[in-house]
Each structure stands twice: as structure tokens, then as C-alpha cells.
Length: 248
Length: 252
Image 1: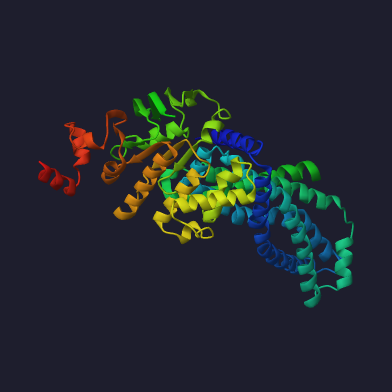
Image 2: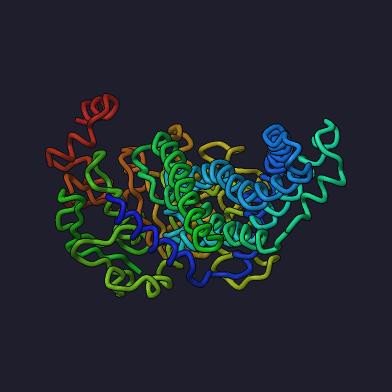
């Protein structure tokens, strides 16, 4: 299959996912389960990464602007801009594309391999709608919260290392965080996240759903790898497009 | 209600797997599709249940042309189909109870208590009482098959499909599963289709048998006529094992 055939099949899959579910109560229950699987279980790694990256950003910025002509609060300002505009949305979503994406691809791929998807179809259940729609809706709901938490923790991590290591005073750091703050940067980041969330849920689902069952476990593994590569590429591409149109 | 397949053809990437297959699966009987590996048994079954679309020909459920229906039109007939897959195909993340309850949750308007009663009834029928809260990974292969049968009968199906129900099971458990399928067929007067290449199953429950060879309906009959037929391919299939060869020697 060439790229255009994959894109066509992907669009048809998404269209089928957004059909009316057999039972709304089942969809609601599945969304809650997916919020836990996709979102809540990722919080610890997101928190850890955000705290450490925020801290590293403060050290890096401080070590690179060691000049009496640049005010000290610039450290806070640069850290805020980096974290809000790029790290918490793009970098965290790239990491989640690996963690969540491989999980989704292998889960659905294994279901295909073990005929669980065939079992759903024979029962008359729209398997794409039943399996993939809850993942899409859960991702769209939970990812913005994860990104907001990451922003907060990144800035806290930066503040902690900055003040504890004597790089910057707390007042100067907070002043830097508030300096020319435009709430649009948060909206822009959340806007991007919604796109990323959609593709983090759908691309691995696509690779898992259309795995070649005769390839066995090897093929399921490959589908996980392919899904991470594809979703990371799409995230970077969308990031570029959205940034170009919204910030330039 | 019976299932009739008329002149079914199905191919993949230019290779014809099913070549003009016709057969009637009779109501209230254990209908067997037998044949060697790669003969087209599973493809035929997947065509009958609608997992594959046929290239030509028709599948008729109780007088209604299933293969000519749209996806939404098929829903009614699908609700009357129960299927036991080769690997059981239980949902790993669901407990035994949730697996059996799944079709009820999706397609019935029963209350939670009514569903639970039905689940317990089905589990009791397959002799798996009090296993409700175990997960598929915590039970044996034979138990998994029985849970899959309980799930398949949960909605009182008119048609029961069993794809190699004995695969991976020891001979004793295989007989238990065969007898369970046969008893359910008689008890609910349903049309049962069993895909197998296990001669023990053929001799246990084979009432209406189709032998499929290289995608064609090669022979039809029952468990009595299959051992006496002089068809060369059937002979090679039936008497493939040393045990059957010795048995034939003693009988003759």
C-alpha cells in the first residue's frame, strides 16, 4: 500500500469511528476507562519529566545569559516561554505518542490477532466505533489537563532549582514568569494539544486495527513501532503548521 | 431455520480459495465442515458469518439473503448468531462474567439483575458456576472454550458457529466440548456449524458433514457414511492417523 492508500483508509476508519454508538452508556463507561488508561496512568511520567526539564531549562538559560546587560528575570521569562509554547505541548505529546501510542497499537493489534475484533463484528458491534471512539474522546478530554499540569510543574521545577541553587531569587523568577505574559500562549498550546491528542489516539489505532494477523506477535510489535514513528512525524508537522499560522 | 450457501466463490489477490461451494446447513443438527488445513474451511465460515464478503453466490439465513444485505440490515441476523472462535476470542480485560454479559449489555434492554441471572444461567449450563470473577488468563483452555460458548448462547442464538472448538485441547476435554455443542444444538433446536479437522469430533457429533477439498464441496454425508466411502481424498483424511488405520484393519 502506498501513502495515499493509507491516508484514505485512515480517513474511512475515522469516519466509521464517529458513527452512532450501539449504547451510549457503554461508550461513557469506556471513555472513563480510557481516561484512566491513557491519561491518569501517564501523569507520573509527565510530572517527573516536567519538573526536571523545567529545572534544566533554568540552569541552561542562566548559564547562557551570564551578562550584566541582561536582567536576571530573563531566566524566568525564557523558561516560561519555552515550557508553555513548546515543551508542555509538543514535547510531552511526543513522549505520550511513544507511551500511549505503542500501548494502543499493541492492544488493538493483539485483539485483531486473537480474533477478538472478529468476535465483535460477528456479534454486530461496530468494532472501530466500539474500540477507537472512546480512545479519541478520552484523549481529547484529558490531554489538555495533562499539558496544563505539565506547564505548572515545569515552572515549579525551574523555580525550585533556580532558588535552591542560588541562580535567581524567587521574586526575580516570578517577575520573569509574569513579564509580558500573554494568555494566548496557553490557548495556543492547548489548541495544538487537541490536534496532537487526536492523532495520538487515531494513528496507533489505525496501525493496530489493520495489522496483518498472519504476521503474529512480530507484526504487532512492528505496528507499535510504525505507529510511534508516524504519530511523532505528524505531531511535528502539525506543530510547524499551527505555529506558522498562529504565531507568525 | 437452516443456512443455505449457493455457489459461493471467494478469492484473495487473484487466488481463488472457494470455488463454487453450495451446501445446506440443517436446523437442529450439528453440521460439520471438515477438510485439510488450507482447504478453505475458515474462509467459507467467515463468508457465511459476513466477516468476508463473497465474490459471487449467496448466503441465505432462514430464507433471507444475508450476502445481499447492507451492514445495517444484517444487524438483525447477526443478533441471532453466536460464534465460538478457535482461540476462544474472549476479551482479556473483561472477567468471565463481563465476557458473557457483553452481548446482553450491547443488544438487550435487560436490567442489571436480569443480565446477571442470564449470565449465571449460561455459566451453569456450561458447568462454570462461581467462576464469574476470574479473568480469561486465570482459567484453562477448556474453560475458556466453555466461557466462549456461554457468551455465544447468551442471546439465545438461532445459529451457532464453532471454529475448531477442540484446537489445543486434550482428547477428554475435546469430547466434553463436542458433547456440550451437540446438547445445546438439540436443546435449543438451533443450526450449528462446526469447523474441524478432528476425526474424533466427526465421529462424536457429525450429523451432516461437508468435506471441503481445495475450495470445493468434495463430499457430503454423515458420520456413518464417511467411514465407508470409497472416495480417495476422504479416505486419506479419515484414515490419516495410525490409530484409524489399525481400526480399519481390525474392522475389515
